[in-house]
Length: 227
Ligand SMILES: Cc1cc2nc3c(=O)[nH]c(=O)nc-3n(C[C@H](O)[C@H](O)[C@H](O)COP(=O)(O)O)c2cc1C
Image (cartoon, rainbow, N blue to C red; front, side, top):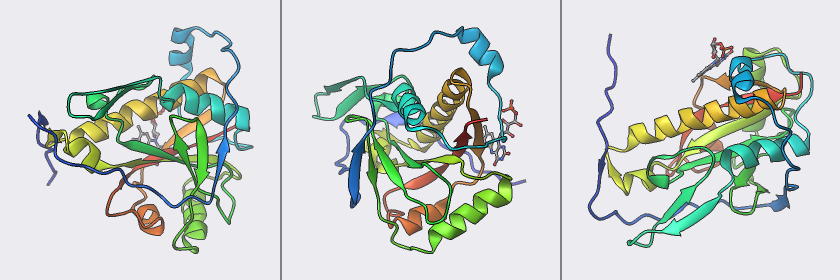
């Protein structure tokens, strides 16, 4: 059986030049700041974490806000000696680079609306689909996997050059980053009593439909919803 062995990452002495990819944006909506946390036992949440495919309703805006704030909101930023940002969020990322962007489809109904999370302003920007018919294909693809209606979907997309500019052979760091992110989404969903299930496909077609396949590799995602 053939498999690809990813090479071990090595930090570069001097980072290679890298420019962030910017999407065209249709509109921006700011998420409400989450209310104070209702405390639940961490170990109970850990025990409760499971893949749940029973979804009746998509998430409320307050739940989307709480989830994204908890897993991906930027808490602090500093700049290194090369002028590169190093961030801290509740989820770890190799080198504090955070190369993974989160797309959200709040309601999985055709025609879908795709929004990109901004971890600094805690907002969602609507991004145009360059291939309009892809939305229908995407909804059908998820519905073939799960018998659900109106779920919320998160899709993770890695800007590989962002990490590779700082680490030679850095590909595995991004795959490990997405594992950490996915687990935190699972845990926060369990804490909020929401259903969550990971999605195996990477959604390469999604990158094509957003016309960003040159700059992003898509890394799967998850479906979420109210039970
Ligand atoms: C990377 C990853 C991809 C997954 N992809 C799918 C999927 O496409 N469909 C699905 O029903 N479950 C998927 N799952 C969920 C697993 O099937 C599930 O984690 C496993 O059966 C253990 O069950 P539990 O999560 O409830 O403990 C995925 C899980 C992971 C970590």
